[in-house]
Image 1 (cartoon, rainbow, N blue to C red):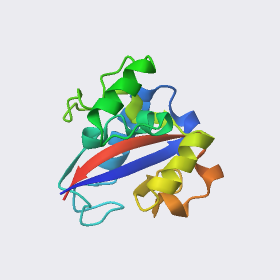
Image 2 (image 1 turned 180 degrees about the vertical axis):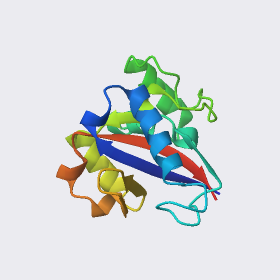
Image 3 (image 1 turned 135 degrees about the horizontal axis):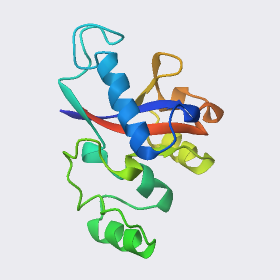
Image 4 (image 1 turned 90 degrees about the vertical axis):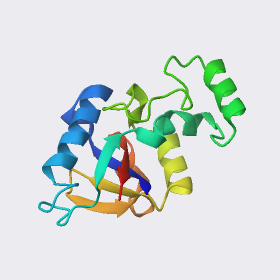
Amino acid sequence: MHILYFVIFKKKRVNTSQEARIEAESLLNSENFCSSEGYFGGGKADWFIIGGRWSGLLRYLPLGINIDSKEEAETIWKESGLKEPTPYERNNHESLGYEDDAMIVDQKLASILQERYGDIEVYDADHYNENCIADIKPEDLIGRWLVVVDYHV
């Protein structure tokens, strides 16, 4: 089963999306997300990948795209002038995902995440804990890197 997950950390740790995606992957590996030691003890997952099935999520949510409608999603995506492949054109096994699989959270994204994805877990690398998005104050989300993770159990 594939599960959506997030990693969050302070903006000052890295400068670019690529660095943020590398940092998230490194953090999960160092905490043994897929092993028997570290923060997650017996390992939370069999394996994980940045972006994966949820690649593009952070970009399409603020655009108001209904991802369940392929035609609508592709139309809005192209009308918005986005250069990245649409979520339907992406390789879900791209090792570090795509540029928009790590973004700095703004007010709009924080609100949407808490409203629609409040029950999704997030590893807060700055505080070494795991919570659901709804359990994090919006002001503690805004201005930090958020990276999309697809993991398998």
